[in-house]
Structures are given as C-alpha cells and as structure tokens.
Image (cartoon, one colour):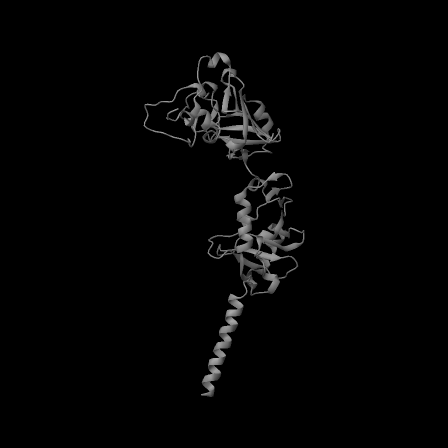
Length: 361
C-alpha cells in the first residue's frame, strides 16, 4: 500500500513538473535567453530594424499613429502584422549541435537586428533574426548577448517569420495618394495638359458640390446631380501601386513622356494633396502591346501611369483601374444618365464607366 501511494505521489509530481515547464512558461529552454515574445504590444513605442547591408527602418508610434523614419505614414497592415508576430512568436527548440556553427555564421552575416522599445524609450527586447529552419517551419533567432540561437515560430503558422522583419522601405511606407472623405472634401482641380476644355474645378458650395468648367462647354446645360454627388466620394483611400524612387534613369524617362494631367485635391482643413500624372511608355507588362486600347496612343501603356507626388519628392506608379473614376472630363458632369438601363448603381465601384453608371437623377 505504501509503495502504491509513493508511486502515485511520484506520478503527481512528474505531472505538475510537466505542466509547469510546458504550459506555465512559453520559453522553457533558457529563461530570458529564449524569450522573443512581447505580450503587451500596446506598450511598444518604437521598433528599429537594421540589416548587415546598412539598411535600417525606424517605426515610431506618435499620437496613435505609426511613422516610418520620422516622416512617412506606415502601411497599417504591415505594422499590424509585425506587432502580431512579436506577440505570437514563441521558441520551439534550441539549435542542435550539428547546425550550431552554420546558424551562427548566418546570424553574423545575414541577420536583421530587431530593437524594441517601450513608450518611455526603454528597451523591451533586442534580438537577431535570419532565414528559415531546415524544415521551413520557423526562423533562427538569438537575443543580444546570448550564446544559444533558437528556432522561433508562430504556433499554427506554416512558414517562417524572418520575412516580416524587412528593412525594405517599400514594405513599410504607406501608398496613399489621396485620402479625403466626402465630409472633408473642399475642392478638386483637374487640369488636362493637352485638353483644356476637359479641365474643371470641383468644389464644395452651400448646397453641396458644383463643377466649374469652360462656359462654352456647359452653356445651357444642367449638371447631373447624381454624378456630382458620387464623384465627391472618390477621393478617400486612393492608393498607388508602389514607389519607384531610385530607379535608374527615372528622371530621363519621366521627362521624355507627356504630362497627362494634374490633380489637386484640398480638404476643409486647408491641406492639399497633389499628383502630376504622366503617360508610361509601352513595356513588356503592357496589355495593349498586342491588343490596342481604344482612345490610347499605342506608344503608351493603357493600364498604368507615372505620378509625381509629395511636392515632387516621390515618383509612383498608379493604375487605371484605381484612377479612372477620378480622371473624368468636364462634359461628363453635364451628361444625362442612360435611364433605359435596368442597372442602378448608387455608389459605383471599380473604374472605367463608373461615372456613367445608369441611375435616375
């Protein structure tokens, strides 16, 4: 009987030990040395990423928003993914003896250093991250000052987390071109370089929005109220495809193509967002290389344009599918809708014929 009681007591002690080390602590391999998790990401005030090639990224929380390198807004999805990673990543196991030397070499020559600070400027964690484990499940990490690297992963995630610690500015910088909701839109001035009759000013008035255009174009015509109302909603969350700053001979390319138009959108708080839009030369990605696009000169891309923004500091690529709804002509605001169609679209989506969508006035 005594032996049975002793045996049961031993089993209980083993069970308690297993529970303590496996379930009560995510990092069971080396105490703080194996701790790569930040439970309370709301306390994070700054994240600094630096690779071995001299590239670095500074992400800072300012007044509830995140800034990149102290000046640019951060893509919300990118920072949310990084915060989730810091909160969810856990140590899987220490690097084994056979792989130790290779992993140390990788960490020394290819890793990204991650420094995480709280809102008071104190360090919360500093570690190095690189590559993927041999089974493609997890990345190698080692805390600053530690001797042992570990394989770290997000439970249930297929892949590795090292790519989320990128030092490429294009992965972090917000791609917004215009972001003015209808309630804050004051005016839009759209000027076509080679088509002055199609230029116009779209502005807020006492009774809503109005369109100012060349008198000869709109004489005796009444504005299409539905189109005017819908157009005022098109300047919220308008994004580019991406930045192309630093592209070889970019200035020469831009100067060799015509300026298509300039868009200046102002908000009620006095801020202005401007984009100079240029034609893009036909290239291998151009769909109209084989099939001509109606109304587009065959020497230019029909789906993408260059745009110079942020007070001429940045050059971006924009897509027709995003901007076509904005790039309307003055006369279109004075055309009647096709009421013979059965399709009624209150808030048109997509591009192309968005402003010509059938609906009653």
